[in-house]
Length: 200
Image (cartoon, rainbow, N blue to C red; front, side):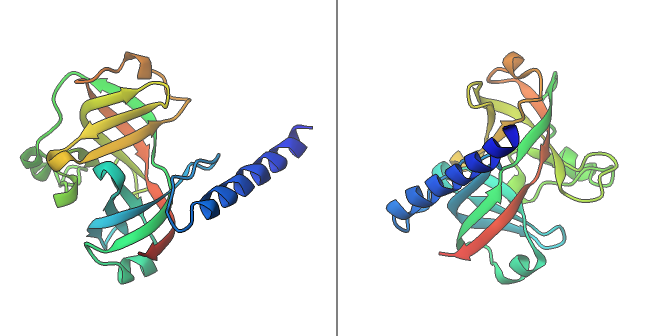
């Protein structure tokens, strides 16, 4: 019975999403599904050609870094407005730290020690490649918590110029109930991956 219910539920969710988005016309809306796919109009803030990663800002100046295809990297430029659908980034590990996050100077000094120096778009939160990782599908993010939503299971970091970065915490991750605003945390995060990108 479980095997029959799941396809029916997925069909119902997809049908509901189609009806909701077409009823609203061309206005993009956030999509919620079992796959965790988000759709939004965004501005491209930075491009990492080597690692095929875009940094985009969306509604309420929320910033996200998204892994894209080589074709997308070639055709997209900084400051482009795009409609992007992507699998949401999700924290698969959470650790509360006792010290403040590293500043940009320290990150640059340690760039040869398994740390990636932050780009212009990432100076508000420290990103590192986990030890032993060979690509950017998983990253480590360290920063001071600006907001916690235990019901939605999200942690938000704040940056300069009103920018924010909100990351979902996987239900399997323990310790979210111990995290408060002002705590310094390290998250191991699965990188957001683009599903579809179109120019606005």
